[in-house]
Image 1 (cartoon, one colour):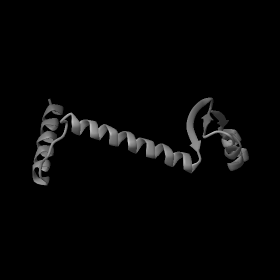
Image 2 (cartoon, one colour; image 1 turned 120 degrees about the vertical axis):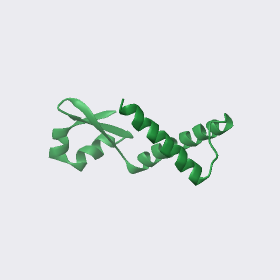
Image 3 (cartoon, one colour; image 1 turned 60 degrees about the vertical axis):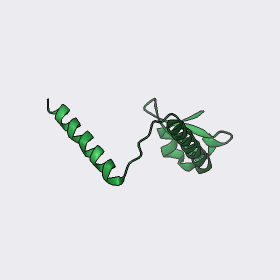
Length: 94
């Protein structure tokens, strides 16, 4: 992965990013010698987001298959959440 420093970015702007991304999908931006940011083209970003959503769907299906879910009405759900938060408050005040 190509590395840009903040000064390159300040001086050359978008041209520095475009050059860093030529032939690569991602580039890092270093600030004071520490890698702080990653830049990429939007198409690659959308691809990564789609991968995240696919992974979440696989995990959700596995949870359902393993019985790790609750089926309840909205009122039951709110009551369960309220009970949970009340117990959290009680625990934190000790």
